[in-house]
Length: 587
Ligand SMILES: [Zn+2]
Image 1 (cartoon, rainbow, N blue to C red):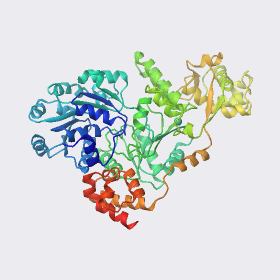
Image 2 (image 1 turned 90 degrees about the vertical axis):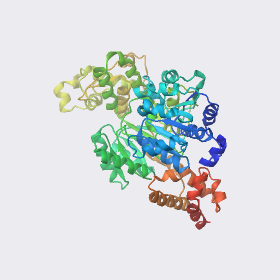
Image 3 (image 1 turned 60 degrees about the vertical axis):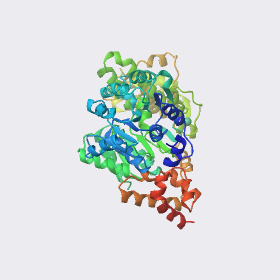
Image 4 (image 1 turned 180 degrees about the horizontal axis):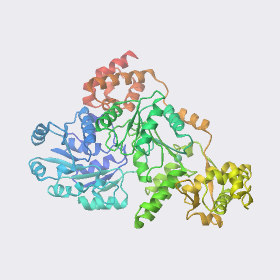
């Protein structure tokens, strides 16, 4: 049996572990039960793949999504690991069972509902297990955001094999959920390994919606590689996909209303693509193992900071630079607040309001976005990250308390029935027909905003809606929310963030992009050909980072190529000559 470091080198082609991988692997190797909370992209799967190669027996991996299991098996097999899935979608189940029992598998992936059946447990009794890995372990907890009762039944399986190390894995779990996972799966408290939440290669950006199709088109044009745009409704996914397709970039839509065969085809096309834009509802991405997603855009407000973190986390899992951009509007907050006050059970409202206020603080922040996210997860990050919109191009902040008070007064004086356009007319002193007929030109607030203040009315209205000082009814009429009083009474200030001009941002982005490199392009072309021949996505062959290192080191022998990060023994065997040919051509 190889040591973990030998397996890392030989099978995966890396010379050292990242982050806390080593700590997790050491525990599993020592036969101890462990809960690893690691952000997406931290190399979670390596923490069970390596012990499965280094301990006697087969590793059992419980995973909730069939499509994801198939992706993972494909990547594992490409690295030379003997892996298989046992699911209702597989027609080679007999063969897989024979391999499992015959000791011919390093890893067997199954869904929780199968793993908890008596038949499966009887079969497992006949096999030597190296470990039991439970992926997406937050599903075991009712505190988690994705509770699945099937996960509770796993306790019987793991307890029947107390001596086999169990490894629970999740990317998102707050302290409640973590405690619950430990209790539900019988893992001791000292078995918790918490990796940081930071995803340093993701550049966060947040801006108000202001002509969304144009804003999205600009983002797509600036960002090469595959990307996901999250839209808020089925209808919006199709509309935005049609608009973005005009850019010439391959674009598809994905939502629950599509025919299953169309949905599956679109997903397959995206996974195999190097430049496709997928416009989708948030369900998309959950079961997809695609490490080279270069951007994730939100066309509207996500549900919570947790959801935002999880959805943006689908970008840049290969560690290369990636972007996450959120476009939000005041109406997102209005709609969400209306839903809380009318559709949410009373006992859940305080929690929901808190969730929304946390999002408001994020989108309206003048400071580092990453710092806000990490603080939300209980970390103490440095005040600036240098890789978010506010760090790269600090917005100007103005004190908008005075104009905020004037706007609130105008809403109050006009009986809280009018939208921002009318209130702006009143404050600017415009004698429109509507104003005269309502007698609003005789109000004390008529014409009290000067030119500079008038320019701030819309951004201020947005900020007041976000922080629940104003609420909009379904016709846009603005009335007071609970945060209005403290502002009117002079107890609270309203700082306002004004985003910098676009030109500056674009220049900043350009600095980040990779320089053109003909050798890198040629290596990518070779990878594309091989991927097509073998019917696998390009990243299964090599990640971009590996190709980039090849282009920098320019090895011309198999030995030299084997030194490149990400080139393991099996891949060197299978693809080495094909890539050497390209490298020699450019020598
Ligand atoms: Zn920052």
